Image (cartoon, rainbow, N blue to C red; front, side):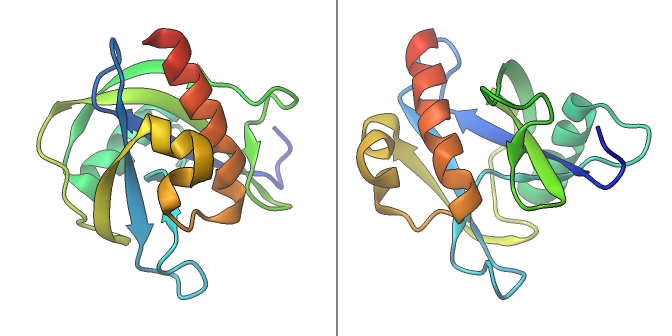
Length: 147
């Protein structure tokens, strides 16, 4: 990874890794330019952390849950992950909740389980952060291939 690229991780939290039907979406409460838009929960990878370690930490902080990790949803053209901006890329994993009940503890003001079938057509009717929109479709495809 180029040193100017910020490594970010995101969770495509499914209701079940074995037979997924719904995805947990999170509505941003900050920063102001992203507030009200929907995303995959997650965050920046800290020095010395692997992607999965960062994802587990972020989900404990943001949602109060522990996860069982599934397959990574790989960007077809970039080993760095899904481009978020000129300086940040996000790696995304399918996962399911192993323990805890998700609550919007940090950076979000609402969580919503969205049927995968609805995500396929119009993003579930949610205003997704623009950089996350292509990831939504890739997650639906990946979840369909598993279910």
